[in-house]
Length: 127
Image (cartoon, rainbow, N blue to C red; front, top):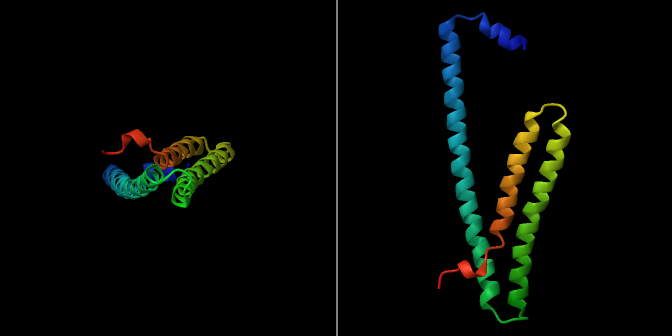
């Protein structure tokens, strides 16, 4: 709070420049993180679809089908466990600062959607 009071003592033009820089930095960081996340999700979605297609196209009871199913479930379980850990950590840190709960729940939702990408519906494959 002392930092805000100190900044309020500065001239208005400097406060405006500082606010503009902060807005630009948040916008730039948001764009970079969204671009990174979207490329990462698309790469992993292709991997998940590969394992699911291998599972669907191989013979029932074959070793290839078993491995592809295990890989798909491992990918889904991996991100599910990450989401549970983030929820627990955000609940614990939420007592210190309430914004940690909101951010933690958003990150957990992201991990849950990533886990769902490893279990695609077989009817959605292209013919």
